[in-house]
Amino acid sequence: MSHDEDHIASTKEKLVRMANQIATFFHSKPREEGIAGVAEHINKFWEPRMRRQFFELLDGDAEDFDELVIAASPKIKRPQTPQQADASLGYVRPAETVGATPRK
Image (cartoon, rainbow, N blue to C red; front, side):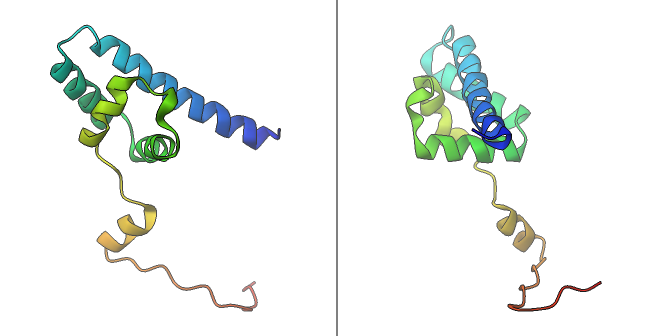
């Protein structure tokens, strides 16, 4: 496994672990309060890139996540893709020209 693959795997493991740690804390609360607490914490403290990776993991295979995290996921803000964020600001990325010679 390359260094990049190690980093990707460790980042995924860290996100799962962090989400599950949040859920562990909120298991001490009534269920609905716990669900709301997990979602609120992630919405408040996780930057959009982290939430985007979280949803990629959750959409791919949710089995490593605590059930409270899964239950809270509909209340977690799903971040825009970079393209959606650009479009919402009126920015359109220039299309890459096929076969174009790079500028010097």
